[in-house]
Length: 399
Image 1 (cartoon, one colour):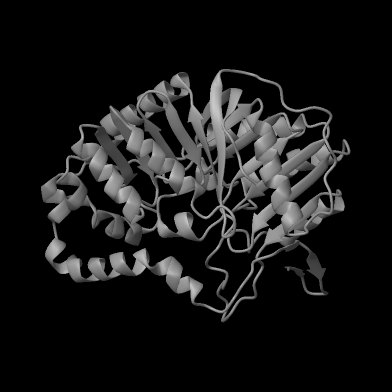
Image 2 (cartoon, rainbow, N blue to C red):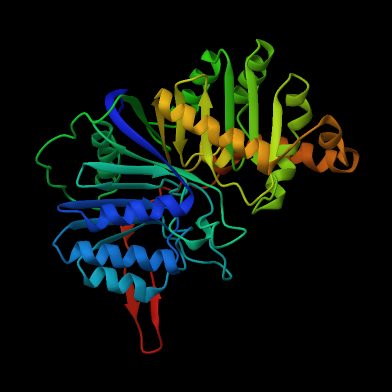
């Protein structure tokens, strides 16, 4: 499946769970025909339970609902939660369910990392926000900083096509009924749907990043949770800075996984030397995957700029040409830089470098070749299977 730029779309930026969850839940409750939902994680917490309530309300109106979760990210979802949804007629699917070994999850790679919601083929959401209370920084000081977009217009057809093709390809469904009409034009934004998989679209998201970086003429800002880009992206960022583009990176300063900051920091000195400005976001863990180039281009989605997202995971991003959205994102990111971040200087970048250097260099080159190393493993084709609950006398067990 190949996607093209679609004109005539309306797009709205949603910052953190406080904006994302109410909008998604309202759309689900308003559904008339169909809900398609893909996510990496659903937690059985206040957010997950509100999601369940909204889905049950829609199911009571005979809305057809298909939910797909990742076998690693949602491995521990409460079995009663699953049973309640299935009892309401909701189709539950799990991507790459694998048995545990010594109590540990073994499906570490090729994860379903996409976050997609499509309702009635009329409204869709894409971003990096999972369904959990850890995306509510207003309630939890260490809640994640993250982003999504809500879209209307012709692009919804492509997002729906990506979600349905994924289910059909893995034979999770036999067919999906046609909706009555295609999504009409709703605004002025041009949008391209891009996915990354391990078959037909291995570099689509990376290629769009590269095209945008290469075309940049004035400003380029990337806010990314796990920044360990490919050689190609790293080189093009340096080239953009050398030709006078103001290149700014906003990375984690309070990471949820501290080792990721150590690996990212290996690149700091090299990028600082070519004029790239780097800021570490200090207020809370940064989970976002968002970027702008010049005064129109924006991307929001699930893909980090690291080996897992660029070479192994299943990801989905929207690439958007919209001056209004670009301005909104720019103003938000400037506010983050000015009020919640610390600039990385050469002194900070090299502090402790002498004792960290051997480990970091080894890790750097290992991760560069990590996707190829994973490819040496015995053939493994992840599949989507029904998410079922096995009932025993002692307890229900998620399978």
